[in-house]
Image (cartoon, rainbow, N blue to C red; front, side, top):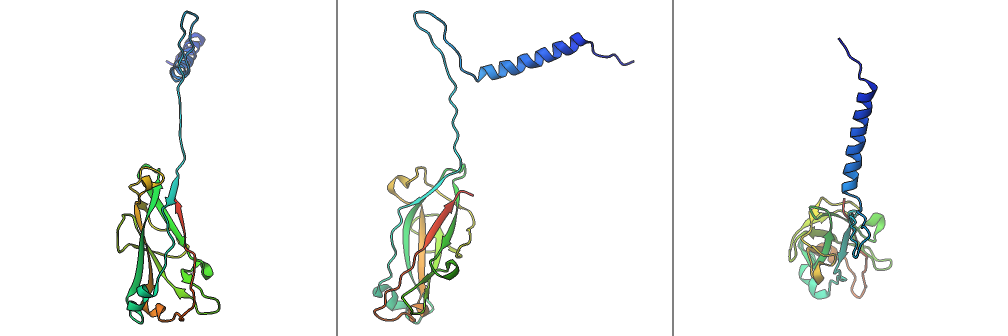
Length: 191
């Protein structure tokens, strides 16, 4: 036989639920002081931050004749590396890199007026002092990397290696006396 809950039982249950909710929220709320020779109160302090990243310690890259002459016409490359800082506040310190060149469709190219453009390649290694890394494609987000940095500027140091290379066959297409330039933009994102 079914018995219907009485109004007093429903009211008691509702009161108990309300009391439990009020008690739970009061535990995390500020407490007020009482009048006296001293009075003490307390507040709960909350803080949160969204995912953030930073890249720093970048320097311009220059390929001199002494870098390019030894690889002219060969299948090998002249390579420049630099240690850079990437910081991420993700719980696993992860980040992604999107590299874009200043060439057509964000291509990695160097230009010199009306002369043919000279391509270069870009790679990234999540450790410092490396001579090889993961190849980056123009305007394409990389796979996940992980930083060791715990401060936004790596404490003035570095956490990763940027690698830029020019093939000897491409260097062979450069004209003497011409100045070739391009801009490489490195966009770091937390996701």
